[in-house]
Amino acid sequence: MNADKIRARVEGFSEVCRQNGIKTTHQRSVIYRELVETDEHPDVETIYKRVKLKIPEISLDTVYRTLRLLEEKGIISRLGSHTERTRFDANADQHHHFVCTQCGLVSDFYSEELNAFPPPKAVNTVGVVHAVHVEMKGICNACAEAHGE
Image 1 (cartoon, rainbow, N blue to C red):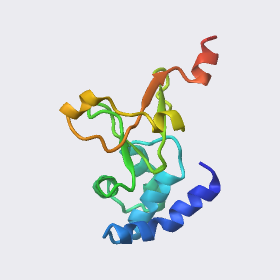
Image 2 (cartoon, rainbow, N blue to C red):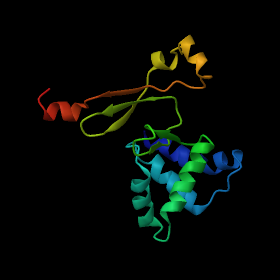
Image 3 (cartoon, rainbow, N blue to C red):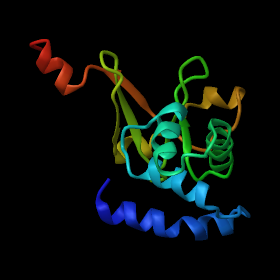
Image 4 (tube, helix red, strand yellow):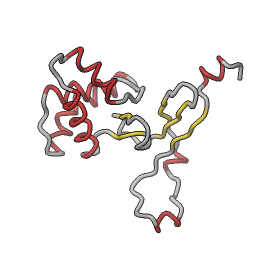
């Protein structure tokens, strides 16, 4: 994500919180900023370690609760299955993910074709689709190069 988008999201955080009935606290702002400033889709423990450098007295529980609240309000999204370590993404633009099965890299990519993908009618027997998110798995360029592929 480019610097202008990062700045716009960080500057707009207070307004997004207000619109969602959330009080903007210093801790929440620092947690959100940490998530917005990276494109690596960190897990809770990684976010906690980084935020703790800026707010030494913050607890892991506060980071968990903040991320759950921001996810509940649709400000961030959770990635991965419930059996994996939960990772978070502050990119609210419609996008999809490529996951490297070798190194675990998660990268955003954008596709108008996938955004326009009509969910199959069979999914109606399961529930109502509100969004389509595609996660593709494979080997990233760096791992492929390292393995001579």
